[in-house]
Image (cartoon, rainbow, N blue to C red):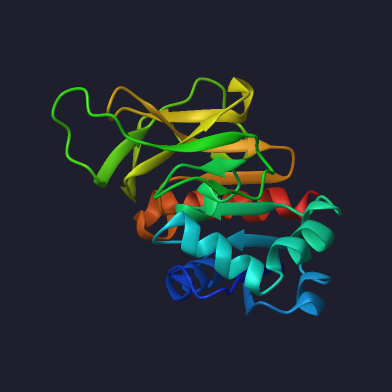
Length: 208
């Protein structure tokens, strides 16, 4: 059984992610210990709340360096979820400017309403893509996933933005660079289609 680390740094709905991983046939390991990251097969970086607080908590626990040394350096698949996806960016402009992990170059910026859209963006919305990737295998374009956010990730390289969602024009809702993946939506809250995405993440991790 595949062991998936769920990064425990005091931010995120780690319980629901762990339960979803168990349903999908993986063994979740909720941890902030370096020795655990040395033996896992994959990793999920959760997150809810403000970017600045979250990145500070990661750094206070030295988890930015631990993940860099034990996950990124060894090409272990990692999936950032919601704020966890935004933390992958170079920087964020939420409540000032904050340096991110920089694993996928880009910036986290606020929504700019175009047609009186409500901010934050909360609820179900569709995820569009033209070329399927392992994370989105057997998921039809246009399926609905569950979102809760006020900021979005603008990648520097368009090839790292692998899916978009229509809101305030459109924004990037799935990112990927090498072994690093991110979803702006919550797969663990997105019912059957969210579980399908997590199963895809587990499957692609088995193949690394």
